[in-house]
Amino acid sequence: MLLFTPGPTPVRENVRQAMAEATIHHRTPEFEAIFRQTREHLLALFGSDEVVMIAATGTGAMEAAVSNLCHHTLLSVNAGKFGERFGKIAAATGLVSVELTYAWDTPASVDDIMAALRHNSEIDAVAVQICESAGGLRHPVEEIAAAVKAFNPDITVIADGITAVGVERIDVSHIDCIIAGSQKAFMLPPGLAMLGLSHAAVAKIGNGKGYYFNLASEITKQRQNTTAYTAATTLVIGLLEVFKTIEAYGGIGKLYCDTARRAKAVRFALEAIELHVYPQSPAKAMTTIDDEQASEIRTLLKETFGVNVAGGQDHLKGKIFRINQMGLIDLNEMAWVLNSVELALALLGRRPYDGTANRVFNEEYFKSRLAPKEN
Ligand SMILES: *Cc1c(COP(=O)(O)O)cnc(C)c1O
Image (tube, rainbow, N blue to C red; front, side, top):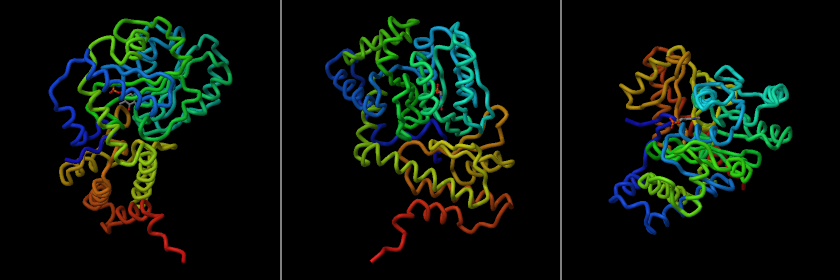
């Protein structure tokens, strides 16, 4: 079965092998060296001043960010399941939660955020998804962050980059905290979350909040290449192997470029077989199609063609399907997924099969190489 869900993503063979080695103790020079290298790779990837790894899923990092970096009122954007979660975390943490709600296909607007900030001077942190995975929606986070900082540099900007870090280059100039998780673009099993922090964020954290998710304790320890509690050694070893794999692939710049090209070519291919892309501003992490027959298409993909794509949640259950674009994806697999979608439409009597999806995908993806050569 081809795993094409936008998290978890498939773990590559060499990474599985690296994680299959005998367990090593975390308080050893051997592990500290691995931790230090992984930390350096993460600092470069995030482009942030500080970085923290915690043994938790992405939601743990969201909670750590909110509890340590919001001291009074959190303004969050809810355009899907994950945005909604920020508000729930704030409430559960005893903070005041103010939410801007959008339809799941609609990106947040800078004007709405600014109006909310002007209306409520108690807001000291803003939290938003870079890609809201519920609908594959890209929010204009960089613009939001710049506007927030221009309005008041003391307001902390928290960006959930769980389906954006490793997918595209994010400008963190105005972002104080950017969050990532292992089972999305990092192509690892779930259980490791990462936070990139600005100097201002580290200052605001101060002595930290809470116990396990106290970021101050982790920052102190991680600067010494160790962790406050037992490190998720296996996943950190896996993460270092992922960074080596990306380097061998040609570097993160090449990965960003290929991801953008592939996501665009997939979108064109699906539109060419008369499918509709759901979000008004699609993220590069996944391709989301809304369709009355989304469940039937998913069932055919799984049972007839061996392809597992994700469905929708809540009111979008049975209404959308989401195809992963994160990580290192083999083109032959991507082409098979598109071919399967086209075959599924033919089996449903929607349109005769003629190979359009694959033709458009290949023409678009290899556009620059297929162009007639000038002489
Ligand atoms: C997957 C995801 C999360 C939550 O991560 P878990 O690892 O399931 O806790 C948060 N935000 C976004 C945007 C996600 O895609």
